[in-house]
Image (spheres, one colour):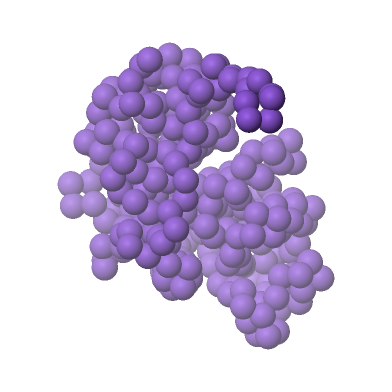
Length: 283
């Protein structure tokens, strides 16, 4: 008004929800589990690897339980630390979904089959992770097969700017077999070590924020704590949270940062990749 200009107020935008500003000093908040996305070419063993991690996690539970395929799992360590793994489809038709997965994660585990090498979707996964600025750990899968040449895989990755440690880079390659479980402990230890370097932290208090995973009723909490009665908005969908079910099929009272849960229920189905924000009330 001082410049003889009439301000225009967008009354609709003022009612919208927005993420909280990022904290200036995240070091004051507690550590959260690293969020790891499994990516790679179709048939290179991403789903098998995730299933092996899921089964090992269920077996480690004292009371046991039935594992739920909710698109993400929380794997426990004997040291009480956790890693959250996200599954992403390997088919080229889901490029956009894979890109969302990379942008919603801290670390990408790039699965490359030892008997097949770098393939088109492997390159796409590398490009998505690189564009998102996400750290990569290479899991060379199917190393139980005879006459596989892992050295060839390592050299081939150099052509796509994946600098492994043995070539002077900072990317670790771990030989594994998702089917037998070979190398999975080493893989988890490498992820845990990298997570310590990244110093991943998030506030537990306050309204929750997260992202909708591939399974449209599953969300991954990034900040805050998702509780019973929380009112959340994801895309054009909204609703009051009735229950939260974890990847072990158990009802949990609250879900903090780095935790994937299936929620019951929003009024409409949100889309995978939609941002989830908590509202103070239904108004």
